[in-house]
Length: 185
Image (cartoon, rainbow, N blue to C red; front, side, top):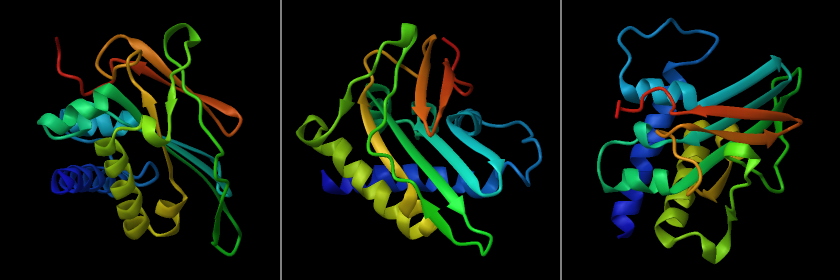
């Protein structure tokens, strides 16, 4: 079981990191013939860089980003969101504003239930712990600044009509669903 969790987490992290490295908003061209995974990854990552000193990123891990298989269901059952707010000093050093908590809501501003402690199933908790470790090792300070939150996803599904709203750092970030990359019904 632990090996399955670690393998799934490694696949998720590799897909995300590869996507971040290869799709930087500031230095990329339009993808030619993007895959469903590419479309989902591009839409799922929100980068708010209004100035060079304050960067906010919100990342919703969605089922189309995950290779087909039993692990994909986890990302439809739970809404797993990573957030980071980095402040960059003129010398290039980063500091982070760690969030105490995070809220999320679906249709009609219906709040999603934030899970913590024993409410998070061991498989999901293990995957989040593995992703946290891998992001920290792979992305250095930025990876260490990412905080992950798990919500009950009964009211929000990436590939069904709806909305996901996440207030973070004095802004409300939204995802319209179905997201790009979902297979047609």
